[in-house]
Length: 455
Picture 1: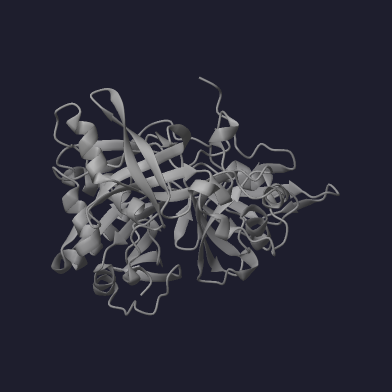
Picture 2: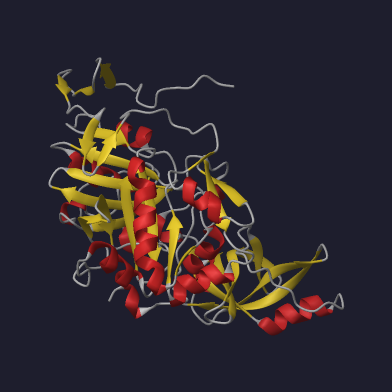
């Protein structure tokens, strides 16, 4: 086993430890050391961070701060691993009950395994703007950005959300460990980077009745909190940060709380949500909802450039449907030059598209084996080859049956000339270990666009 390395043992950045706090110091271009704000332990927003500069990985799978509640509800003991945490895949016998709660009532999903960072200090905004592809100077206090960030070659490293808590404090979520990358780009800036991943628990409250539950739990009106906006409040007397965000494409909120108060928050939300049909939902139900909403997933629709083993595994934002979030009018950012060259050269060589598979084609593939059609209720994340007139042209991912649309849908990475809606392709479908081809039509994303999501 390799020795664990401090992610912040980088040129120009060091950690100065004291008995009661850690101070980050960085040398600027002239070798002048600027001492940063104390960040461990300290209060950052609503949270107490117990370590500001942690090791990068989580070596042991453990329950999240909500595990005392989720473990008792997980009837099938169906657990998966998510960033070192036990994550409920499904609570009941079938996840369709949980999916229905997302679309018809209200569901609660434990999303605590997300990596979470607080970026603070006089130059916090400059660091955010340097890393992300969107214009951080336009991010208002109380606003949330969804954004990708790239390496110097314009290949996507990760995607996540950035919330501006106040003038000099940002809360950043990511799928993968990111403090090293943030630190590498903080050279010469007066900023602290605190990894609060283990200090902050998170619940996604999603569904058409989510607002009613939140209002019951807080005794406040939430109709004025706009889409992708943030507010600090108390939920059941517990200090909580609330963002109007989610991964379901439905009306929803995400609640961020100190891990020590996580169980209290869970209880308060479920007590308030009882009259509204609240249910816990696992990752399988969330997965179906996010595909319907046209939301991509790292390591499925794209591979982080940090771990990609081949060029074809790396993607620019324009290749995974995030080109609208690249702002060439802003100040310089990591990967800008490479993305400008990509656009000047005619644009990306592939694009993300929606796919709708022909049900008759699925039936035909099974009929060759004298079998009735059988479709898993879970999202098929492994890539399937996509063809045009017998020629391999791309791949399909996240194929799933949509309970709301009553169709088989998924994503496809295709050449631009095949990514236009209405284009016909075919997707490989395995039955009894033998491949068949199912016709499919390229469609617009998202598959499901619910007005209440933004209402």
